[in-house]
Image 1 (spheres, rainbow, N blue to C red):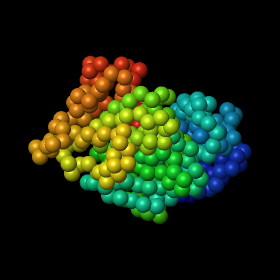
Image 2: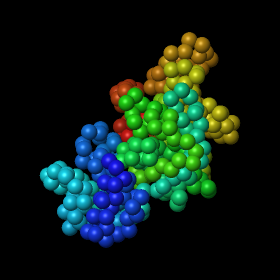
Image 3: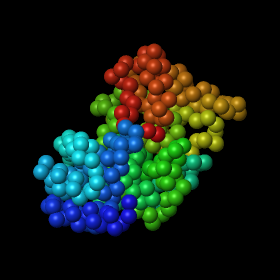
Image 4: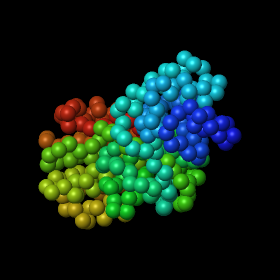
Length: 331
């Protein structure tokens, strides 16, 4: 896609549809629409794109009768496929709240936390209304139109900054770009936050948090949320890694444990013979040993870990209603 093509799309949309759409924003909108129409992405990526487009639908004041006009502006898109995508966008728009189509966010800090992992701190141009445990669609200008779910690693801050933990996945163009190409001063785009299934439930029951890889990010935000609650609830955070060198957020975790006496952090090393006196085994194996009746259990990590968690923790006696796994995105 060229800027010239996106420019023609912008001009056609302006002629046909009401609503503010800058030429710069038209480039991202055009790329996202074409990417979704291409149909080659997996389900989490499609859901991220649909959430962004649903927000754009509301923000730009689109109505059902705009379908033909926008489809015509896209140029050479098969009608049947466009009508199917438009219906999906309309359904998503009915479920998202009011707000901008996306939040431009400047990268203000980048930490190469470990091999293949980066911690990015971004400052949105206006405050992002996120809650701990939620997931956010993220797009980098190096890969326009491609969105990936990431979960903030923090509760909302006074300065509005948001911290993301990103691992470069094999074959993941967006994650690879975020880890290897993005630098401070770059501009990312963030979609509207969505509930992921990891959010804390009301109450003061103890917590068992089980993290694998960058699945630590939303669980660290839950720890910050628990710290701000009027009633303290004891929490055990099992941090799974292959070896000690794979633990990428050790300094922040040490600070949390020093400040909060109700928090216990348990490293779990699956492939480190020098792990003593820490515990040996996978995060799920160690979590089953630390589970106690009455705990709310939140697990976030790679897909294989989540599959194991669903089976092993249920067998260990965790009731279904107390087991919280992410419904969208990948870590």
